Image (cartoon, rainbow, N blue to C red; front, side):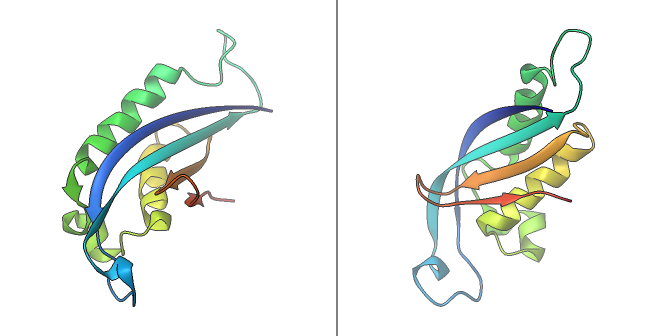
Length: 119
């Protein structure tokens, strides 16, 4: 089994609805996003996937979120903009283009992250 990883970043503000504590208030993060793609076999070039394609697809999605208030985004009007839901949003958007996607991890700080994957 082979696995590749792509990391990109975006900055955004949010607040957690229904949360009792500091995160209920408006605040922001410099988010790190890690996409992991796995395949049992390599393609004819010896790759799992071309990094360039993954970076471009992820960058397009992150541009929708970068320097925005996540709560205003249609998806996060229905889903609280937690790291877990951001990871699921990104995974869902990428899975049709990259069927080997294994997981998406969203880091909101150096020490805290949430991962979404499907079994």
